[in-house]
Amino acid sequence: MDLAFMKTHVSVDCVIFGFDKDQLYVLLVRRNTLGDSGKSLKLPGSLIYQPEDANEAASRVLNELTGIRKMKLKQFKTFTSPMRTADNDDVNWLEYEYHNKIDRLITIAYLSLCKITRKLNVVSKYATVEWRPVNQLPKMPFDHNQIVEESLREIRNWVEYEPDTLFELLPAKFTITEFRLLYEAIYNRNYDARNFHKKMAQIKFILPLDEYQQNVKHRAARYYKFDRVTYNKQRIGM
Image 1: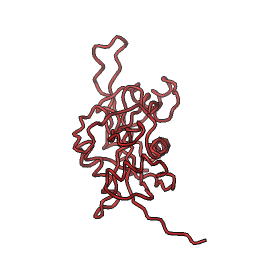
Image 2: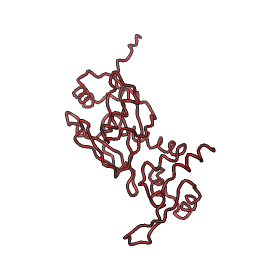
Image 3: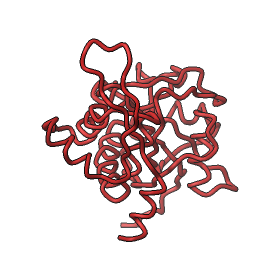
Image 4: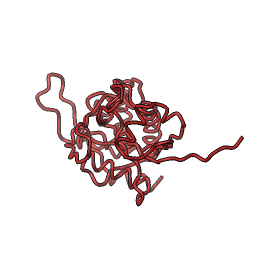
């Protein structure tokens, strides 16, 4: 049997995580509704322009969505299934959006983190950009739900090798409770509050501040901050 080589386009998709209170959020965009059967929310992404490499394309997408020129980016997986373009609605949208005939679509997926309180300076073609809780995501086009699932596993690996990654999601000063809730959201498990506090107290790059919560009904918690200088010294000494 003669096999033809595939005719393909290559794109990038970005999973941008934020954190608020006790939940992880993902930044989604709303595409136009041309024949999309209601699946209008999707991961931000783009076909790669001729002069770009994949990293440059992902940085462009993030900059258009957030206004941030330099964000921490991690390429974590390439999605190549022929079934990615099995849905005619998805293909119709792609061809309408990019004015190209689309046969196969290979996507290089990236992971990034953004403080959810940060004001986004959106200059992309998408009129609507919104944060959605990870556990309340809609059915999205292509394999975007699968990409998010894969990225959740990847962020755990990222945190293990680069613990400073966590502080991209926290405010400049935070409580140990906020830190624990972030861990619980990422790892999808509960931690004993007392034991967690003891372990965090032993980490030298998490510094206690002489500041406490104000105007709270419960006992005011102390604030902490991430000390990058100490962290970098510790990493060098490892």
